Image (cartoon, rainbow, N blue to C red; front, side, top):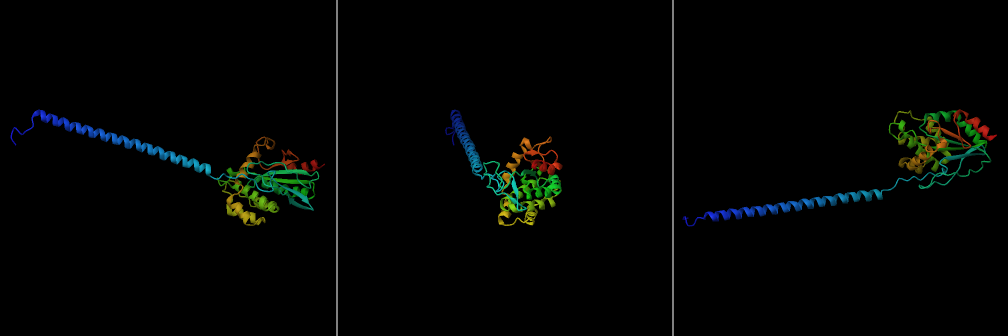
Length: 282
């Protein structure tokens, strides 16, 4: 190469400028591409998030609601018993719908009998003591026709059984028996009180609950399925809330179990239940 073939200073300067311009243009194109990818990625992310939210909302809206329908034979919220021929007989009623609430149902063969209502939690030690002291005497009043008896299961003592929901599961068992084997209700209740677990423990397992129900004479696949699926879980919650919110059933410390009502009047002293029935009968 001769000196004449070498680029001049101006040509070298122009070449440098051209290279610099090309590099600048390439950098601009790179930044535009990155910006597009970034914006596109954010957009796709937003779309994905929106899709997830929509899916969650749809799933929540389409999720099956927990039924709060009540059991048969408890239209008042309680299972009722009357006396007939020296025997205690359950009163049959239709179930309360999920949107319905308990209501008073006329009890046949009462003939002015004293109405006794007990609100009990099968996990309640005081309920067990009350039943041991007065159940037979009250049932004698029912058998003679002097009184009718209504027993309303409630669940207020889950807190006493190590987060096992024993009280609620026991109340569901009571409602299963009322629905499918009402004539065995009192026998099953006796089994639960005789085998009541100590407070502070985890209570009874589902298998142990099923064993007590069977020991009380309530058998069959419908009963077993009701226990295993906790069929009346929603009604246990709903009916308990209605009971505990009723000011007429509350004492100085609020609502507690057992609560006993004789002819519409709540007893302040449970030991007076028999004299209260006798007085009301007169």
